[in-house]
Image 1 (tube, rainbow, N blue to C red):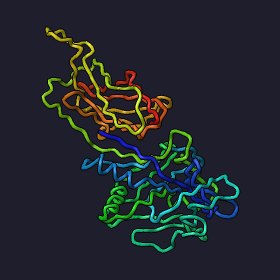
Image 2: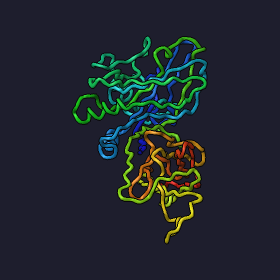
Image 3: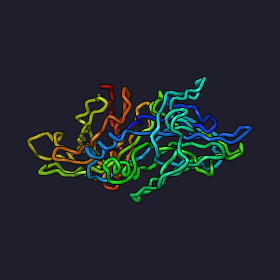
Image 4: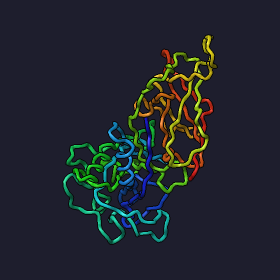
Amino acid sequence: MAVYKLFPEKDSSIYSEFPLMNTGVDSILDVSTFYNSLSPAVSRFLIKFSQDEIGDILENKIGNSNFQTNLKTYIANITGLNADTTLEVYPISGSWNMGTGRYTNSPQTQNGVCWTYRLSSGSEAWPNTYNAYVTASYSGSNIGGGTWYTGSNLGLDVTQSQVLSYSSDKDLNVDVTNTILTWYSASNSLGGFINDGFIIKQSNEDEFIADQNYVTTVKYFSVDTHTIYPPQLEFKWDDFAFNTGSSSNTIINTSRMVASLDNNAGTYRRGSVEKIRVNSRPQFPQRVFQTASIYTTNYYLPTASYYAVKDLDTNEFVIDFDETYTKISADSESSYFTLYMNGLEPERYYQILIKTNIGGETLVLDDNYYFKVING
């Protein structure tokens, strides 16, 4: 099984209240509603990932395997969530320039995308007439705010949403596989539309409400954050294989077992691809007559075995257990899984966890499986 993460090449928030302001290098992505004494206002954010990198993953890593892609952003702050708020995710129609502005700049920076313009203030306004499958939304004189696709000529559903409620997870995590397929088809002249990124907004029912009681501030970390929580596009695919060949090793059948990562180097360079091998054996092996040490015999983990990766400082999963996409494979040597280090923040320590099911018991093994990712 494999998980591969991409980070954005650009992102920015746009504000109806400040229609010419660019915030391209802000550390926050803002998708909020506001209300002052004059009128309601909203913010939305745009985010784009490299199509060359997406194509490389689909062609050279995933191949013909089944896969899923999720857009993930991490909450920085949220207030005013006294009712359910729906965030909508659409593929953008039209190129845009990130710019170099921040929300706090005075005077405003206007050299990139804003509410009214795609490229910079006074140049290339967001259109108010649309091609097939394209729409926009604005209120009164707030013309602009981006344009986006609500369908495609491939018949794929490219609109996604997530409901934020008082008790729900506030991180944005939506399945955008259909949009990725549509972009890839366009890059190969097979229909679809080109990759101009995603726009994230609150639903039409939540935006531009002239009521202070319905103001909801939702802020996520941007690619310019100084934290470990930049947005990401997470690819997961099924490359599970249990091909042991002529190996005489057997599948371990006792829950009283130990497992080790004997080829764990402890330090890996960001961007490397590592095959992590899992060696297992019974904790109390049966007494048998043989000429070799019983401790040199390796056993395979059962097919219902999975891996996960935690950030050691925050204790948060950066790759969670997934019964489809983090399944542990096996070859003639041992059980193993492939770990792509590009999606892990450098200069941090991580812990690998192994989950397996033996005889109806579910075991989670975390016996000092630590490693560090470094720049290189």
